[in-house]
Length: 401
Image (tube, rainbow, N blue to C red; front, side, top):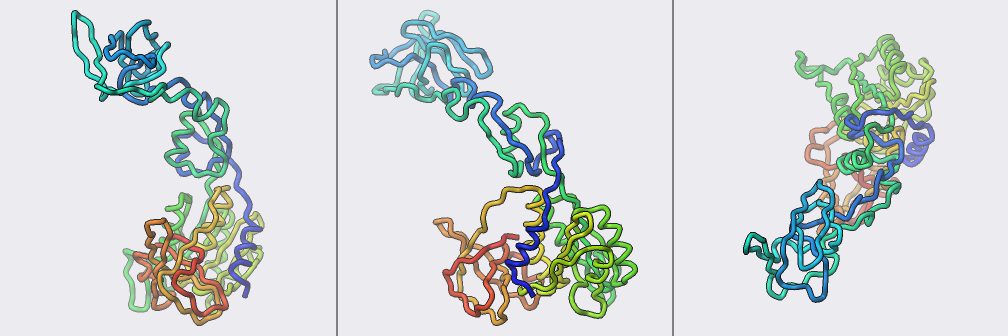
């Protein structure tokens, strides 16, 4: 058996970045950016007003009564503030009037009409600061500044930036094509008649949901029986059409565990088989002739989901060039004991404290087949091998589902 860290290193060494493709930005949400994005204009592109009120020319001897000489709305060209004791009514988002440098918010004055003119009376004792409530042109970013780097996932903020930069098309990484294959004669899909000796097919849909919730939506699910012939035909076809295969079951040492020999017969090079971890010790990993990554995950559901999160998700992130942050850690909220000298993936419920520290309450499962116990868990912590006791307050890597 190899260690968890060795398994991670081997996978990383064999991941190749996918090509970029150009798409409309209306189709780019959730995709991984494959270019830099620069500011089309300065941010903001003009002196922008940030409060509803009036624009004035600041003075230490500002009179308490001003004449309102016009109105400036957002989206209109800049007006000019007349000379004298004048103000221009102005709205949030408008261009600052020529000759003005300060905004008095509407809450700080009252208006009255006299002889056809609107006069403004400042609040008693109110003295505005020079330049207040004016967002100066270019004070955020000069024109040409890099606003986005390749490798970010395009969410709400990134989409707004793309539009602000005047883009209608953008380069993103191609979405990886993933085939998810559940194997086993005992599996029956939901909605189909089931006998007492059979179980529902759940690993495939579980893997698909785990990947789709992270933006890897080009997933197809399949079911193959424990037959060398069917596995050979099915996997050969899927290898030809996908960037990655994620298999569940058939990788241990049982008499019907044909996956390793079938894959190698199809030209998939085995890179490792068996990892010193629980759950998921029989995990298999290899690479096809065209660079396809093939993960053979153990069939027990907790093993499948844990290995998917620990190995498959990071590989997909590398394939798409996603710029991920370093590992997240969580502190154990209670002592934990683990007898086997293996790396342990322990399901946990996370509770953050007021300082933002994550605290992980370990969650026991009956066996690695007890996937129903994972309901309500938030992920798992990875406890190092060759230790049996782990104290509350110790921090370990945390992998959210």
